Structures are given as C-alpha cells and as structure tokens.
Image 1 (cartoon, one colour):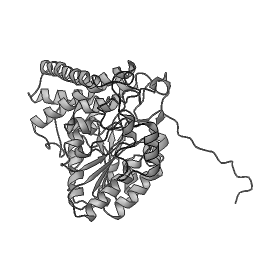
Image 2 (tube, rainbow, N blue to C red):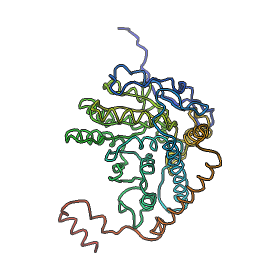
Image 3 (tube, rainbow, N blue to C red):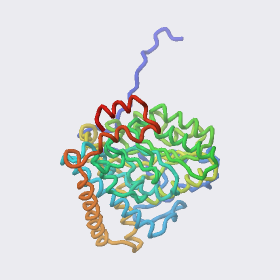
Image 4 (spheres, rainbow, N blue to C red):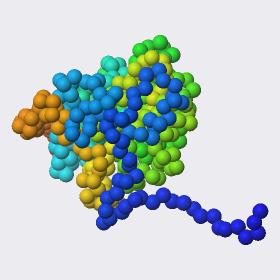
Length: 411
C-alpha cells in the first residue's frame, strides 16, 4: 500500500473528430474483400472468435464479387435488390419532403443503410418474425408490403392500418413478419429471443430476428437477451446496425472497451460476426448463414453491420452540431446503391442508362402511391382515424371503465 496514492481519474470516451474537424475513420480497419473465411454452419463459436473483429466483404473496389461468401444470389435477385434499395431511397426522399411540408409530424431516413434491411429480408422464410427498430423499413419494401399502407401510417390518416396509435414510421405488419416497432430502446431483443424460444417450444419451423442500433447495446435488455438466447439456444438472429452514430452520441460511448459490438457475443458463447453493411451481397450471405444456423437448432448468431448513417437521426435532429459536414463523404465503405449498381454493370446486367430510367420509373411509382395516400388525409388535412378506434381492438372484452369513457366521448 502506498502512502500517497495518485488520484483516480474518471474516463469519458472522446470522438476522433468534432464539427469543423477533418473526418477520420482510421479506427475502422477494412480487410480485403473475399479475405474472410466462411466457416461451416455448424461451427463451434469458440473457433471463430476472429470473425467478431474482422469485416466480411464480398464486393471489391472494382465491383467484382469475390471470396467464399460470394454466390448466394442470382443476377435477377441482385437486380431486385438494387430496385428495392432504390425504392427505399426514393420513398425516404418523398416522405422527408412531406414532413417538411407539414403533412406528417416526424420521419426517419435510411440513407446509407439500405442494404442492411433490404438484403437481409431476402434470406428469411414466410412466417419468420422481425423485431425491428425505426430504420428497417427495407424489410417491408423488399417483402412486398404496399407503400400506400406505409404512407397512410406516416400520415395517420383515415386509412392508417394502425388507427393513429403509433408514431409515424413505427409500422406493424404481422403477415409480413414485422413486429410492432417500439420507441423504447432494445425491447426488440428480449421480445425476439422470447418469440424464438416459444417457436422452439412449439416445435415450429419459424425463426426470429432482433434488431438494435449501436447505442442500444448499452441497455440492460441487450445483455438479458443474450443470456437467454445463449442458455436456451434460441433460434434467433440478433442484429446490431452499427451506423457510427447513436443519435448525437458516437459509438465509443456504447461500445465501451469491447473493441467491436460483435465481440460482446463472445462472452455468451454466441457465434459473432461483423459484415460490411454497405455490401448487399455480403449482408445477404451472412444473413443466410445465420438463418440456416438458427433453423438447424445450432443456436443464435450475433451480427454487427458496419455501416454509416448519412442523414440526420430524424427530422428533429441536426447532425452538423456533432459531426463534420463532410464526414459521410469520407466513409470508407461507400454507398450501398452505387456499389451494387457498379457490380451489375460490370457483370453486363445493368447500365447507367437503365439506372437513370429505373430511377424515373420508381419516382413515378412512389409519387403515385403518395397521391393515393394523401387522398385519405394528411396530418392537417383530410380524413383521420375515428376516435372510436382508441377503444377497439385492445381487449377481447372491453373493461367497464373504457366502455364508460367511450360512451362519454359519444363514439
């Protein structure tokens, strides 16, 4: 014991750069595309610890698909994927504009993250259930959910499938494997693990998928979910979308000293991987691998998608207050739409001309859906859900106090 110990120091992680500084992504080492091994689906998680620290990539800088994770999609499936991402990006732009015009109160864009949800959706089977956050609308778009219904929900109009009960963009579509979005962080994880355990108890064949952002991994529900998933080998895929920014907080606050978010799965004995979230082909390959593992009763997989949130966190956020304005241009993994586009051009399946034509066709389709949705009302004009809807569809048998409230409201 020393007589004069030095004072303790409280550590607060600091971001690499602040507004006005030069963007720096030197802390994101990018391995060569195709260089990360693809283990067998039944691999022992203890033997693939290195995958929690590397990044699985398929598309190289020239636009070629290389390595052991390539080849999970046909050219036609890749073309569909490109259209899905383009549709989501156009949908985002129109709904962002609608919010600025006062037609809805709130919106959240997916710019830069389109590949994560759009590619993942194509690795699932009918009946599988996603427990998403607010930035996985690509699961719906790639799954064929009607854009008009999505817009009706955003506008909270008379055709809103959720009757005005949810914040705009908090969709719910059971038949499309999209569980109701919760605004509370990380509830998705424990719900997904519980749903997966129930599926296994029933002897069903359906798997669950939990989604969180990087910041939500600091919540206690994250760790509780990993305990149950590991203990009971739940047929679940636990996704972490690491877009570098949890609202205005950089990832170092939530990640702590684990090095990567995927590495948090190692202490629970869970297979943990990191993947290039801006590489559509890599995302699909990893999703397919994890889904097969879950369906084979081999337990959960934790996947970290390394990507970047280009836009603001939401229409209520100003990212220039906490990061350099040019930071997105410096992001080393590029744009998911451009990368898949260039790959298909290199394969002779696409061209700049077809891309421009498809952009125009998608814009026309999205505008048409928007006109139809707006004909049913927007935030300040047109039809609204009935006040009666507040009381219906909540209880199998309405409690007396709610019946009295409904009668008092005259509905």
